[in-house]
Amino acid sequence: MRRALDIARNGPRGINPQVGAVLLSPEGDIIAEGWHRGAGTPHAEVDALSQLPPGAAHGATAVVTLEPCNHTGRTGPCSEALLDAGVARVVYAVADPNPRSAGGADRLHAAGVEVVQGVCHDEAADLLASWFTVQRLGRPHVTVKWAQSLDGRAAAEDGTSQWITGAEARADVHRRRGRADAIVVGTGTILADDPSLTAREEDGGLRPHQPIPVVLGRSEVPVDAAVRRHPHSLLQYDGDLDAALTDLRERGVQRVFVEGGPTIASAFLRAGIADEMLVYLAPVLLGGSRLALTDLGVASIDRARRLDVARIERLGDDLLIVARPHDTRTPEGEES
Image (cartoon, rainbow, N blue to C red; front, side):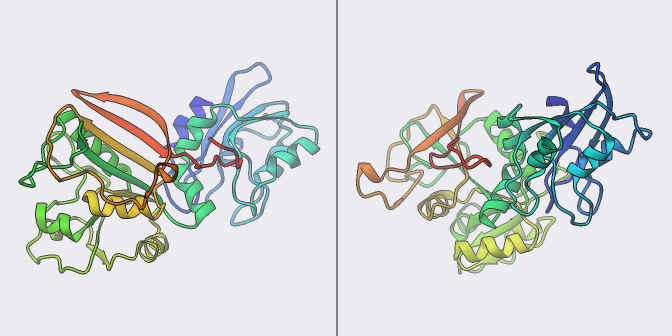
């Protein structure tokens, strides 16, 4: 399954999920591999089957990162292709959350195929997180990032904030920017810090993939702002988060990286529009009034926004805490 997850990443992120498939002989040897290469192309299972002569998959085990689909779209049902090939066993990581395409596991089981689910579930769910969000909520997957001192400040009292965290943490941020489809800040950040909103390599060069720069707020972005020189044209919205995300989704954006300072970060958190939070914690004390977050609409402790900590990473002297809302549900609809 981990091999299937590795090759799934060969596929592009788009309206369809990144999926990998590995076919094993009855003796357990790999006989074919495949992945989904984009909308309108064969799904991972069919891609793998196409590499074998007729009858070669009879009695084989298909290991797939996502439940085989059970509907006809631009391509036929993968469940049917597996049955036609004589596959005896199907192992998959996560269930398909889309009711139009789900049901492949049940169809295979009803036809006498042994079906095993949940292998490497968490790894597959992480790979497919943005696609799952689009399927469940109809909006892009939103990651909210902020950096803070140990005492919860985002900047010194004079407003300086650029170097709270160290080089390793900053490099990690740029790697994550490079995996996002859009990066979001507010006009306050544009006017105060003049960020370029690019994703850069450690040597300062641009990464191959650049997120679309998005600015929220009504203030005009200066014509000489660094973001105006971004490889992609700037998108600006008046601050309506739902409207902005709807438009970004229609533009094909699946992963949004919110990096816009306390006001914008707090707005997304207050609205409950945060699927993942990245908190870079620096071992410094700043004091003062410049808090990392502002009002979240929490009036009492029983209204606190509870989080599940997915992992904690050491980045040089800094810590990265990756957290998700406590009520985030898995694709199967159960608590994660």
